[in-house]
Image (spheres, rainbow, N blue to C red):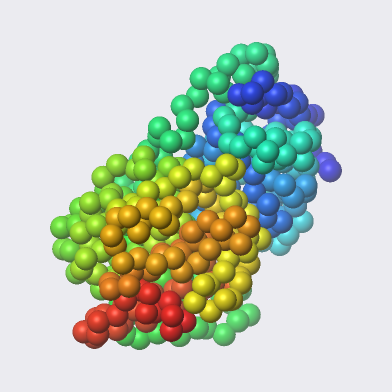
Length: 400
């Protein structure tokens, strides 16, 4: 490993009093947030730029991070929203033809502090066994006092008291027309986008760009709107369908979204991913609960209950919809997918209306791509509804 300058000290202090010492990278600052870990072996830039990590300090379990640098094409949002970054080894300079800057330069440019050189295995075990807790990361040489950092971690607001969607959603509506990357010019054949085109309104709870790209590739003309857009404002755009995006934090803390989603779910086809899945569950009368340490990584096993197919899935969430709460609410909703590690709900579909949702990420970039069929299902459901057919999300799920 080589570095551009002599290493400076960094500290990561947990609310339980545990201290980790390492080397500072990125921005020279102090950040407090909820600690989580991600088990992906690739795609660190997509993880860093995923708005779903707002409010969190992310630890990578893979040991060597930074070897491919960073480039603007792989950003999932205009900027990162996570609070801090923790790695075992941070490599520079990068070795990849697509790299435009080093990872430390990317972090510094966006004001994100990072720490390396600590025992990430011990940290991950602490989160796994003890559950989520807040921590404070300092790369500021003037603030390395460990007792003060612990006090900051203990005094931080818990994630469930914060409406983080308000921090990451867009300020005003915009059109998105970019499709998926098809390689350098002449490398791959151009893909024809399906016809007819369909109009979709994407409610932005922290949407990842690759979701929007895949909607375009599957024949949708996409308009992205702020999270608190009213049902009336959505109707004014004359959409054929509504998409509910991923996003950060506790779904129960997001203000101003349940009622518009509830109204629109009675009128239009709807597809939700991750936080969008949870918000749809809440809008249908269900409840959510916080998981012990969440699911974050690109290697989660998800089963499609209609087919028995098990896919390797990318996930990033700390909350789950309670299946029993939907039964109690009286909505004809069925669980369509589950996580085989802990049996948590990973997919829902309405038996009477064209609604379905999934907890994991079918758009995952760089992958896995096992569950991209959800976008095909969404197009099929929207086409049939637009043609006047009575179709339900559960019907689409059973037909596969």
